[in-house]
Image (tube, rainbow, N blue to C red; front, top):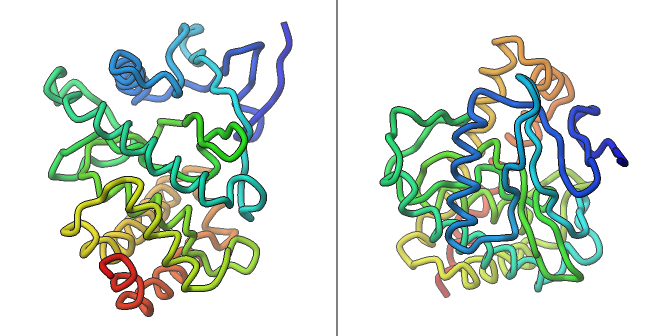
Length: 258
């Protein structure tokens, strides 16, 4: 049996073709969601294998190449961008009836639910949470942040991460016009409706501000991960990105609607 540390300061381990991760209070709900997605034919996401004692879950391993910022190589390609959007659409469509099959009050989510409850959002749909085969996004993982919300809530964060609308010189990719073009490609591949395209920039801003607020809330409650994030200035980076998106609101929206 081979083991390899693959994330979160040694807490996540790849064991043969499975992943061992810490259990959380929302894990049972996520297990139900993952099974639901597989029942709907979404095979390129994890599924529960077993629970080990009180502390760990064992999930199937999603194979493929993984990337992080800065976006270089296959993950920066237009094919990766479009295939990511198409997979997100499949996830959303498959999850649309999840709440109707479960008692809402019995479900526990890491992040607050957000009305209207159109789908179950992934919550952190980003380049570092997908797997690639060549330039094709072939899988998605880390559903800890999943929660009920409108489609655009997830699309907005996906666009922010894949365009990406980041101002940090290490994480940034391309000019504003290239970012707008990538946004258009993502929304076209997802088949985002025009009414949602008109709301996309405002939703991106709202989504990022909600993230910053959540980070501060968790840090104030003593969550070590978020205390470290605040100390390292991650919240300030998001705030700079919010300002950048606001400044270019008209240009981005025009590029989506043209």
